[in-house]
View 1 (spheres, rainbow, N blue to C red):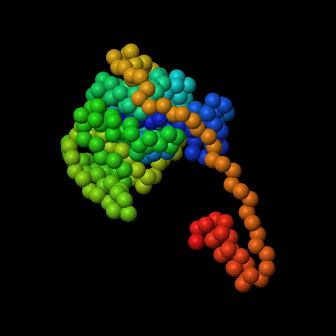
View 2 (spheres, rainbow, N blue to C red):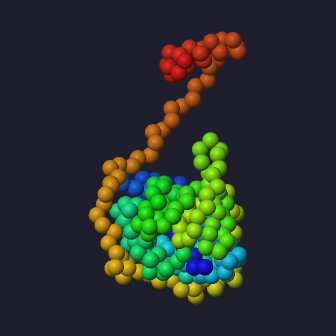
View 3 (cartoon, rainbow, N blue to C red):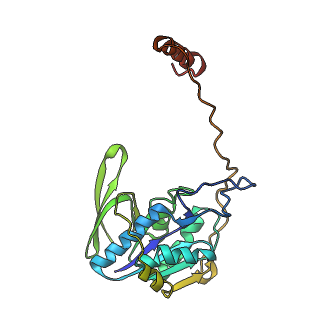
Length: 255
């Protein structure tokens, strides 16, 4: 089986972020980067599929040329065989999906795993758009996945704790949810070997693709307003309770 997996380099989930002076996004200078959390589940699942069924894993990333180091340590060192880094900056999710689709077609993979979303913009759109552009089946928010030949069975999370079990046949795009697996850590020997694994850096022109003009734009980004200081209500329990009710009713207006 030839397996594809999408892995985006994003700001680390635990990093302290600031908005850039233009108000158009996150200031990346000095901020720790890493593979997007949900994409890590997709990478781990692709490795488990290979371990169970054999084959080859190819990762796909749309990002900067400098993302290569993080991809080697966070993707190739874990067990992915090859990486394709598309060094473009599409203006919107459809542009990203267009470039990914062109690369997936070129590599002729049978299944593509993605995170349910990235942890930076959280558009929840690229996986669905990728499947539509490829004309493949698509299952979202998958928490369990098995294969038998060309068929798959996936369990997906829905609202209110409900789960849905779906079946289908390849080719397909599978979007991975938290709980699908436990992500492994790269061992030192694997990190060293990853330095020699193939990584193709390509452009949209190399793929014969056009990401197109922006279909949406971000008008402004700003940090949340500072929270007001807390208040301490003095007095005994009965007095404090009466004052609290008054404040909730007259000032907060939640009663």
